[in-house]
Amino acid sequence: MTATSTAAPTTPVPAVAPAAAVTALRVFAVLLLLGVLLQPFFAGGFLRGTFDWAVTAHEIGANATFGVALLEGLLVLAVPAFRRDKALLGGLVGIGVLLTAIIGLGYVGGDAVTAHVPLAVFVAIAVTHHAQSAFRSR
Ligand code: HEM
Image (cartoon, rainbow, N blue to C red; front, side, top):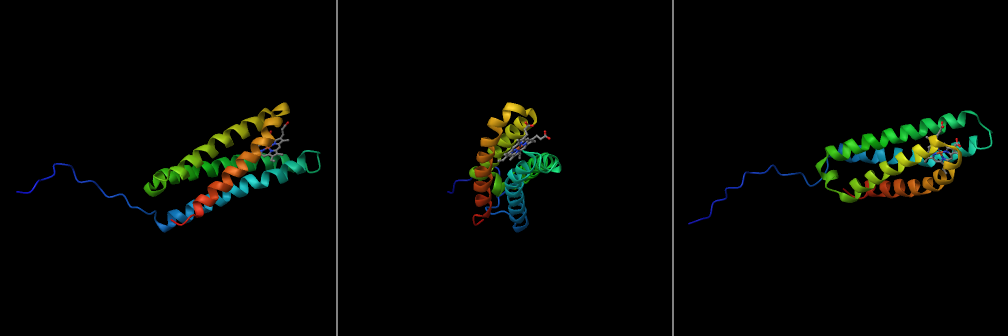
């Protein structure tokens, strides 16, 4: 006599992400990296009033970077193979928290810049690490 299973059949979750999703993940990760790495150039432009437009570019760059992080978050949640990757998911959540903090401190302005600038270094490290993770073989 053979034992019969009463468990409901489960839909197998693909182990790898579709190629288009991997490409999209990498594009978002590179945009995040560029978005953050451009910020000190704009800051250098407006800090001593050299380029008036640079503060607007700094603000637009910040919000666009946050938008990219949100879109990438939606992608990671939508693709099971990405969602299961705790380093990818955790890294992106961390980046979201850091971006929220740095943008908030930027808008506070004044003395908050003493925390804003060092935080930018941590954000840069986080997005670099994240891009490496997105380009790992998948
Ligand atoms: C080394 C890198 C950075 C430097 C030196 C820097 C410097 C500054 C300075 C001096 C201000 C003006 C503060 C004031 O009004 O007193 C500022 C504002 C701001 N920063 Fe940064 N920042 C850097 C990176 C970033 C990053 C990575 C983000 C977000 C992705 C960001 C987002 C903002 C925002 C949203 C503002 C407010 C802009 C406005 O009021 O129009 N910054 N930053």
